[in-house]
Amino acid sequence: MRLSRTILSAALLALGAAPLAQAGNPYADYVPPLSAQPLNRIVQDNAYKQLDYFFRKLAEEKEGIKIDGYAPFKSGDKFLPGKVAAGLGHALLNTPKDDPRLPQLLQQYSDIADMTVDMDNHTWGIYYYMLMLRQLKDAGLLERAIKPATLEKLRRQLDWRAFVTQPGYELMNLPTNYYGVAFSIARLRVLMGWEDDSGAKVLLNKMLEHYAAYSGKYGFSDETSGEGRFDRYSILLIAEICERFVETGVEVTPDLKAMLRKAATVALNVANPSGSGFSFGRSLGPYGETAMLEILSISAYLGVLTPEEKEYAYAYSSRIAARYMDFWFNPAMNSVDMWNQGRRTDTYRGKHRILGENFSLLHQLIFTNEQWNMAGMKDKAPRQDLQAWLDKTQPKFSLTWFAQGEYDRAMAVFRDRKNVFSLLMINGGQSQYNNSPYYPLPFAPGIVSGIADSGSAHPQLLPKITLADGTELLGTSYIRNIKDSRKGGRYTVSYHQDELAKQGGKAPAKDSRIKLDSVYTMAPGVITRTDTYTPVGKQEVKQISLDFASFSDGAKVQAGTVRFAEGAVYEYSVKGLGGCKAEPTNGSDLYKAPYGPMKTLVSCSSGQLTMDKPLVIQWTLKYR
Image 1 (cartoon, one colour):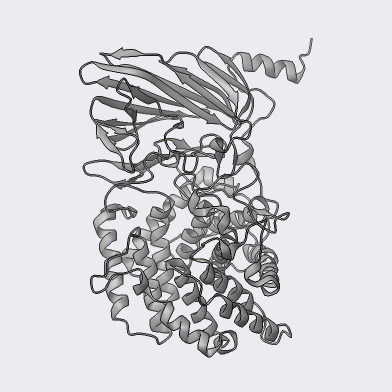
Image 2 (cartoon, helix red, strand yellow):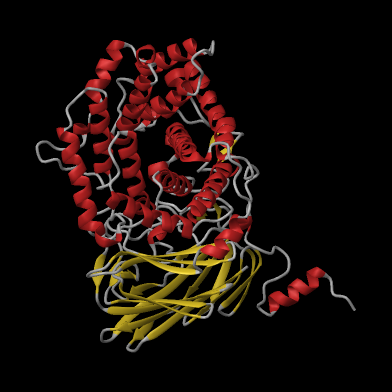
């Protein structure tokens, strides 16, 4: 008798094995339709068409422009004038000087500059505007693109002193990476002949001093003054610094190149043929991918990659650009789409900023393509054996240190076929410590994701302990003694916390009533987290809860085990708590990743208990 595929799959599912249907991870298996095209062709044939569309729309609708129902100039986007100037400026620079359309485009650009010159324009917006003014000047187009009176206003307005104190040179309530923005503006003002280089020199020293103080020997920037917030930007920042040096004519030092090499190593370590990028931290979506473009393109240009790495970094970069044109660009909106189709981003990148997000992302695609062109890869067909090369050259497991001291900060990367897990072990610091994109979780597209601005109401894959006095505790912030071990195809990461993070404030607060030892075990197709909670004395607990928002669907629950009919995760089991339940999310905003919706919420919990001895809670994910 020959069993049908459906019956056999059901039988395998009942036994806890991966069913035959729905094999693989749709997010990891995704292949961008344009993946075989050269990066330069992807940008020329697609990115510039999108810019042309916005140019026409702005010239016609001006400040009344609407995109997918939103009015960008009425949204309070304080970077928008600069992003408009940069985006439309790329369209000018890409138009041949003998093109009969150029005079009209220059006139329209001038009109739009007049329209926006008195609008709020801060920090990044100032940088974008300054960068484009310098490029237009170098191209001999500045006087035709900006009227003299408008340029004089811009000379007064586009100033780093708008967000850096004088004479102390301190940032005005901004993350420390803004020293790089200020330095870039100062250097561009020097190149425009608007000031001497004294301010730029001080800002450069400030930027490098911060790097030395809070990155030390590891070379990755803490976004705070030592609170331990490391994310996408921590790895990207050194690439941005090198880019600013190159575009403003400053020589990139050997020390900076050495730090850039560390960032490039991380980028290659998490590279994949689907074109996805960083999977942790805030403000992701396509920015998790364009960060990789920036790191790898400047690394190629500055020669910090080997010739072979350069070939495959370019192949990965081409996949990222191809993914943007298909996965992220929504033709029905004529726009990047970070907000629909079950996607969610943080408030910082809300849909009110839709026009600026289009311009900044297109800018990143265009200037990184230019860097690849300068690195000798213009119009070169990308290699199509990227996965094979990654399997051969990239470690199955690696541990990258961010900081050591009172607390440890690190990231472990585990590669399993096309799945790439990034186990982030940091503290999100003030305003981010309780948001799940900063939890110590093994993030991987389609398997485990954080949820932007989630808070701690439904903490993703972390037990939440509610004490009898109402205090809520999570094991997020005070990580010590990170250790890793490797045996065969099994990898283990462990760490300890003497204090749990008390929830409810803007920043974490230490609570030493319960200690925590955590162990992750990673092997092909399975990840297990084992937590041992040890009370100090006797602790009365109201409840312990554990949630998992999963991309998988068709859940069947049996005691502490949930099996899924569809999706990358086919089994999730919990030990140490009471029963579990699984419910569809029904499209709830509470359960959306930057790139798509979670389908099922699995909730497990205990009742009231007295903790007077160690309690072990364990969860296991089995995935395709």
